[in-house]
Image (cartoon, rainbow, N blue to C red; front, side, top):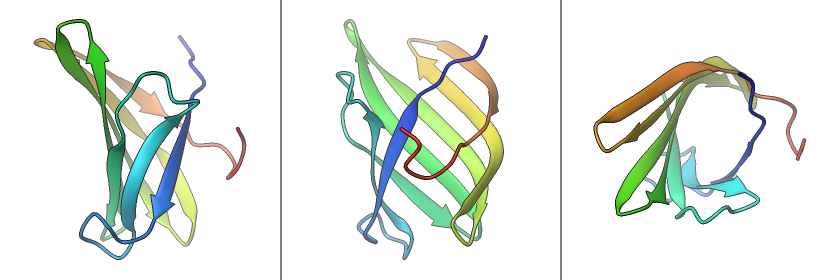
Length: 95
């Protein structure tokens, strides 16, 4: 199954690392703002989202260098259920 979604990252250093900040899905589909960090070339994005009476987390991980994000993996975790798979990033401002 293929799903297209966009994640907007605001790189302002606010999440503890020089390349870090807020992360939101675009358009914002009832998700809470998340955060991202690039540490030693590894991009991690965590976005919480309401899922009924629980909270699910969207997790994205990929290598990043000089403004380029490589293929990576995603994880969706909620209520004891986990889903994961491959992740590909498109062009900047592609949404």
